[in-house]
Length: 440
Image (cartoon, rainbow, N blue to C red; front, side, top):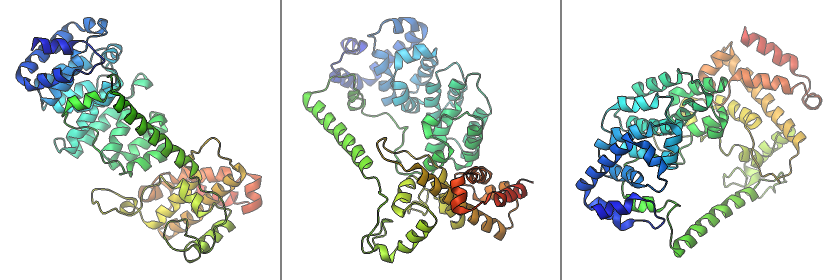
């Protein structure tokens, strides 16, 4: 095994496939050598960082994970708990790529060991996140109860960090999305209110809600490490054959073309023929489907259906999709609440578009004001019907993307525009009266 370990000890652009296969064939002997290697690294970490070509620890993590070697668990946790700059130099992209699965694959049933790393602010933030990912998978497996997991996440959130850049709340939001912990939605909004959420991860709170109801990617991010030979070979640091490089370039080219195509397929504000297919996608002719609605939208200064559908593209699917475990909006909210929320979403959700796309800002702002006015009318009617007397009472049952007080106050600001007043009249006093009634 000495020759095999020598081949794996130092980095080489030529992938050591045969050496890894021999190491796997001789699992028992390999395991003993690798555990001793990790022990030495724990005792003398400086020597590892100083030798830039030393690479056996990298293979050790993956091999021990594939072997499901529980003896490696505590050793791995000790190494990744070293000072952040040292850990980053040693492990680099492994931290965000596979560390969560490596920890999961070697887990020795001691949750307290995971919690020690997660709760240590001196440990690299993304290492803590990887360990928390593994913890989340244990919850999904049923090895941690939902009640206990939620309680633990709330315990973590209750601890405010000394350094905002080391706030694990940023990563807990990802756990909430991945594990669909709807019970913690309000906790996330509270974090947004105090600036403890990084918009670069899931956007503003309304985008976070979109992610919560998004089941388009159900691939588990934490899994048992298997077949490391083929898996590690895909890393860009290893040389590829000419044929593989050509195939990779074809793959990237297809991705670029798809993105360009999406940017070109921008709905235009153009007249639709009565006998053309309806842009809502129903398959019916326009005259037998949304023509009447379109005329109403036009009268209200709102955008055509095709444009609305564009900006509602990421809005959660309302009805169920046949999978009982997938929670949909209609499972929690009635159609009136969803209708109000969609109107507010059209007005307030951040719109991203190609830089070169021409925009009629004045027309768009008028449409947004109209959506909010429509939502306000429906809000008043629903509140009267259900004898709702405060914003808090409404939100307890009907809040989806936006708190009612927040969007109605936004409407109040927009009603001050002279252009809005000229089109819709002065509705300021009406809104102010409702705000006063619902706040008191």
